[in-house]
Image 1 (cartoon, rainbow, N blue to C red):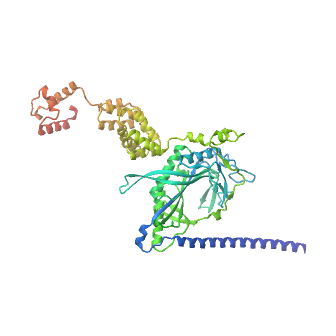
Image 2: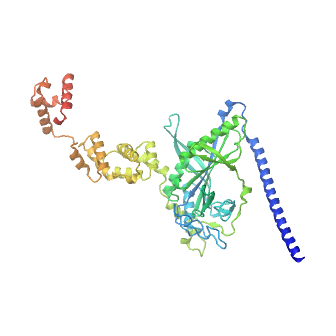
Image 3: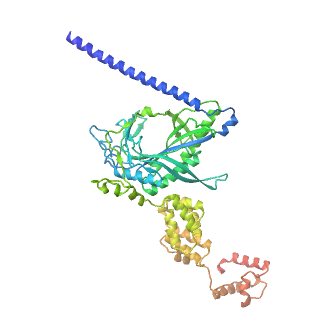
Length: 549
């Protein structure tokens, strides 16, 4: 009887567990259904009313961005494991990254400083006190089942980003826009899932788990893909200039989520969809423009826009559904119990007594270290060198090109506007033709300056200078003067030497000329005072025997 009673109680516990599991599952399904019904109802009320197909042309796109920038640091946000791209799977994983019991997070000071510097560059208000939270969701590549982020009180708020792009009918006008930065928050990255379709299994690489990120939330102040792509490029340049993020989108160091909706101007905003994990500025423009047109067509055909998360397929140029959009209730935010509030200080005077100033983050110290930002540099280039605004964009956007240009200007007598022509056409033309980066250019700024100095002195013509540049590209070890001499491209300015050349031409071909071959009129023969038919004969003579020159 004892054995029977024990078996009965075990079975009862099993049944209770099964019933409890089914109950929880049913409750979750019901909650999901309720959320879906509520979402569907609310979205139908906010859909722009399309009375006819012509009205859909009045719809305008509304775009906001959430950008995840990987902080340029040697170690992760809360652990000492190193950060390295393309390292062997699971070769850079600390106990905290794997969420082993008993491990606690320790905040990386470098990541805090990077967030503060970025906030200052984007005109943000730096919160002297910020808090960390847990954002719960389960993926296999996040062992803890939650992400540490800043939801209640982020490190920086209320900033702005000024960007420019080429617009207008011919796309040749430089248009400037400003997008508001809602907040910048620190958070940790997740790992990576590697799907093996042949073996029908998924492998987990935790090298990225815990890597420090800055999430920059931009308000819905943009209206098309071109604007959003320009904002992403400008932010990328700023982060690279600051050194807070390397910004290599192909390596996942900068990832963009775009929130897209459409509405008629003057009416409430429509239901938005989120396009996740776009990994290039060009794809940002394509994904957003496609999504705007897709939503317009849906509304035009009497459909409704679903609040969902979509992915961009770069091959087809379309967005595809991924899942329903999560809400705040799905993430179950809660204060992070293992991290105290984060404090930053204005200056050394504001540091509390007993605290070592070298061990805290001070805003005035970081503000003094801010470099020249891309927008400021463009304005300076236009004002200082009198170049065109579009040329300033090329100089600043190409890594290292501004420094190259300014080194040429410092070492040559040529005007900056002439230098910019050589940099844009000859230098960049050869680099692009051979798919080289500026650092791989065989022609140094000093060598190009030497060439321009020879050109300015009148020793060679502009066409000859281009020939010399191509030879410099092939043989960078040779000096400009050496190449000019070897190619015999120098211009003759000696009067006596010119007279001898002209005399030789006239003596060799007297039948080609109908004028006396005296020394006094040799220069007239070689100049512009001859009759037109005599000029033509002269030209034909030189073309037939160019060695005479």
